Figure 1 (cartoon, helix red, strand yellow):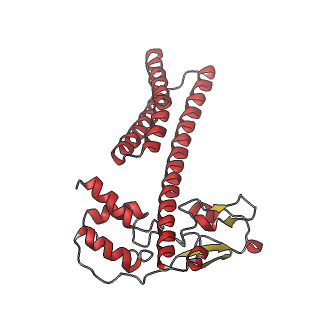
Figure 2: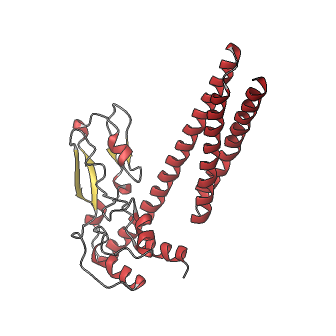
Figure 3: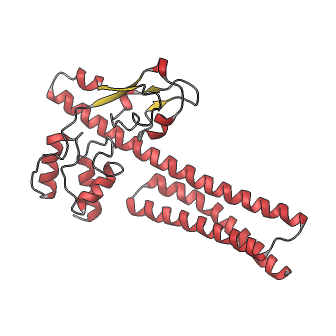
Amino acid sequence: MSRHERIEAIDALLPQTQCGKCGFDGCLPYAEAIADGEPINRCPPGGEPTLERLAALTGQPLVPLAEPAQSPLAAVIREAECIGCTKCIQACPVDAILGAAKRMHTVIADECTGCELCVAPCPVDCIDLVPHPAWQAAESETEREAYLAQRATLGRIRHRARQARLAREAREKRLERQKRLLQQRGRQETAGPPGVRQRQMAARAAEQAVKRVRQQLESARRRGDAEAEATARAQLPEAERLLAEARSALEQAGTAE
């Protein structure tokens, strides 16, 4: 089994709450750490069943959980007290909270993993954690297992979608800043030629932007993340165009001086 296959197999056993209680930023980073030898007993939402499966897969010995096992939870916002600050929305790792600035927020219970990450940022303490309704409604072990499997599938999909969205938005912001910088340089040309040093700074910034997009593309290829790869591919031509313009402007400035 290759390292990539090992990581995927470990990740498939984790509950996908993306809670960070393991000390890592989500279930996949913890799976990567376990593949490199990290202890398998740091997942309270997975509890004893996940611990036993991880031990069987990895060959690590069964040891007590580092923290008590946690039953499935759901966040509930006391909407009458919500001030619409959006801090819980920003904290949610699976985009399970709806709302807008200065507007009431609400949790989509079916998509909430019970990670608790929305609780601490709330400035008015209006978020409660309750037993997940779907877990409580389960009347048999089969139904409970089905719920946990569904939570894991949705949690993984929504977390990866959120990560891709955040990465895309960050790239777009960087490119927009680069565009504004080039536009500013263009306006300066009408008032008088800028110095070579300014053009050098603009070219270096454009080079860094291209480098970042290429790194993100390579990372997406290694992970086999088709959506992230497609996003990076779409960003690369624009970043390269901006770099070409910055280099051309630098050459013109050098010639003028």
